[in-house]
Image (cartoon, rainbow, N blue to C red; front, side, top):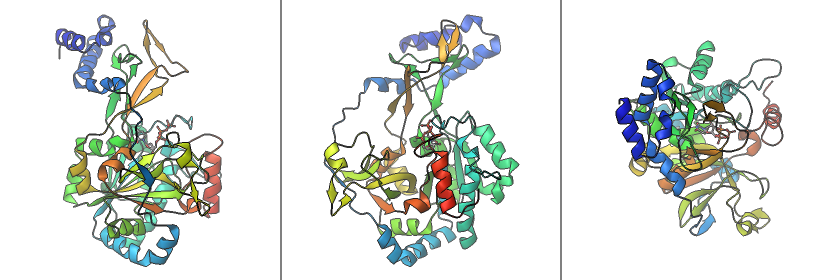
Amino acid sequence: MNYERAKTYLAQRGQEQLLSYYDELPEAERQLLLNQIENLNFSIVNNINKKENGKRGKIQPAGNAVSVEEIRRRRVQFETVGLNLLSENKVGAVLLAGGQGSRLGYSGPKGTFNMGLTKELSIFELQMNNIKKITETTGRHFPLFIMTSYNNNEETVKFFKDRNFFGYPRDRIHFYIQDVAPTCDYNGKIFLDEKSRVSIAPNGNGGWYSSLINSGLGRVLDRNNIEWLNVYSVDNVLQQICDPAFIGATVIKQCRCGAKVVKKVSPEEKVGVLCTEDGKPTIIEYYEMPENLKNKTKKGELVYRYGVTLNYLFNVRDLNSTLGGKLPYHLAEKAIAHMENGVRVTPDKPCGYKFETLVVDMVKLMGSCLAYEVEREREFAPVKNAIGNDSVETARELLRLNGIEL
Ligand code: UTP
């Protein structure tokens, strides 16, 4: 795309501001900017006009949950099915590590954060140690896909490389960079991050599957006949990955996906709740849950009690047939650094939007989802904040409780 074409192209989309500093740029940077404009998905910003109407269908509790008690009783049955699939190499895992981790206030990739006190024990290492427990049982190393973002990929790959991939076979680990979306102001004008660079951000954790396919890694799924993918977040230091009983239960219950859930500690706890909406699985964020449902109890227990932990199992065939890559974009109001009157400003208050797709929307599209209840103290230690709830301190406490030396 040359300058003249870019000018017309942007004028048609009301985004001429992206060429504001073109005349000042050296030739190489001009070309980079034009390339970026050519490859940008401009239609994403139209989402600022699509206000979510907030209307919901009929909400009911997740119907088909397996409780901790049921899992205890049927563990051998569930595990046998899961272990068979793992031994046949039909399962892979996807680590979501493309987030910006802004709440933690740590500059490196979140997985490199050191949870250790007397030694180095990164979040990545803790999760890889949990994987080792499974691969030692099955004698097989499942393919591990690691989704990074354009701004943390290099550091993440280097971290793994410097630590010899934590003993995992190099050829079974596949890094890929998640797709991006432009950011814009409240009027839908796309920001410039630098004079020669359009402002972009990772397109939300729902981008994991389309980004995996776009990166060409679908061939690894095909070559290995992978039937199930266990998707998990980087910020739970007790994350149990490719848990055979979870896989087996999802298969036995004939669900297209499964979600590891924990009992909410209180109606106010800030986790999304797995329930159904017009008979289809859905996850209602804590701030969207109507008061009467949030507080409803039966026999002393919360009716809407299953909080999601961002550990899901998806059937690959169903992902391909139901998604077709189309997920809604949600608007996230953020403080976004951008160019203003020739200067780069870093606001401390929100000034525009980032656009994010969410894993929870994939669950809706799948049509059925098993709520698989796990013991919070054993499997859920989120590291979201620097201090307070779901922080480094609370997670360290839970690691100690599980006998992990820090
Ligand atoms: P969060 O929703 O906590 O977002 O991510 P975040 O960006 O990591 O953290 P904050 O909100 O800025 O503090 C939940 C999981 O989804 C991944 C994260 O890496 C984490 O594992 N994620 C999130 C992505 O992989 N890509 C994204 O675009 C967003």
